[in-house]
Length: 209
Image (cartoon, rainbow, N blue to C red; front, side, top):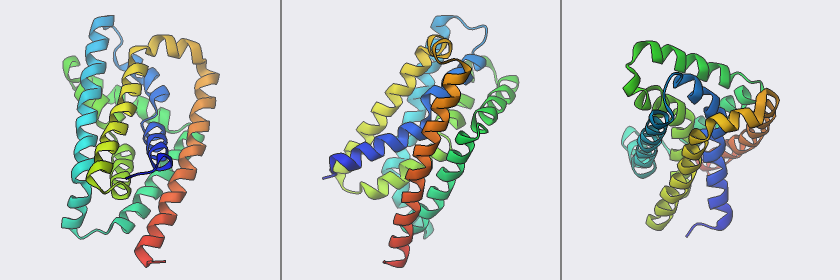
């Protein structure tokens, strides 16, 4: 059974990768002109779809890698490097700009009632970073009980994402530009440290050190 430290590490990794405070202003920009009820529907639907996607990768991600002939050590290294790039973008505030561009481009193409699926669920919530982190964590938490705990951690993380989306207007006003910048950079530094640990674990696993 996974230790408390492992579960806290998993929760921190998912939370930082999902970046709920960073999603709040993007969500507001995507749902301009919607009523509060419509925003709530979009937030709930998008969060549920994203949870379903990440849960599938938590349960089947390792099996899929095995079918493709990719070792978990190799995926840990690749995933850690990807997460480090996301952390780099967060520290230097490039990720928020990219998220906003993604949401703006998608809104002009897709009808408003599909916004919960694209771009909210994919790729803003369950993006490459979140999927990579989920598969990496699934490799660490490999037992049936551990996988159930991982799904629970996923549900808690997604619950916080949903809560942030529901209070997006108040959160954006409370944090302000300076608050968002400080929080994003702090989360980026934490994610960078976690991603380096993934790479170290991957190298040890790949080379049996």
